Length: 120
Picture 1 (tube, helix red, strand yellow):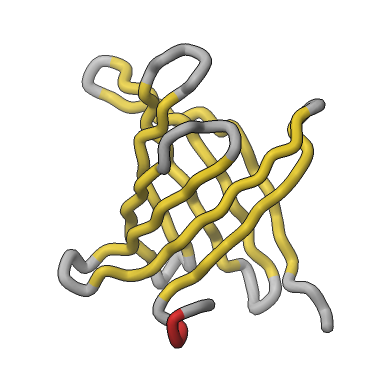
Picture 2: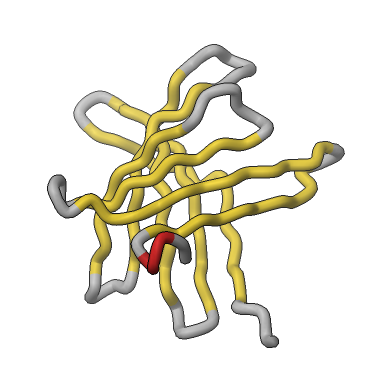
């Protein structure tokens, strides 16, 4: 947490196939719009990704939506990211691509991970 707890700053690194991935995010709550907002940058995309979403207290989930640009295809894709706060130390994070199919939308899971708080 940064800025006196107003914002969350994150860094994520991993190996994706043969490539090294590095991403950084800055997230917070916008009281004027009454929604969570964020921005994400990484070494796989050339433009920052803006996100907006809401927290569901009953489900303990933060759901964020964004539009990302696929460098390979040249297409924009809608994404949904769901963070579930399982317990004090555990989070799950799932990313879906959202595809319009007629009057409906279909979601396809493209990534899922679980993180645990480091014991100090």
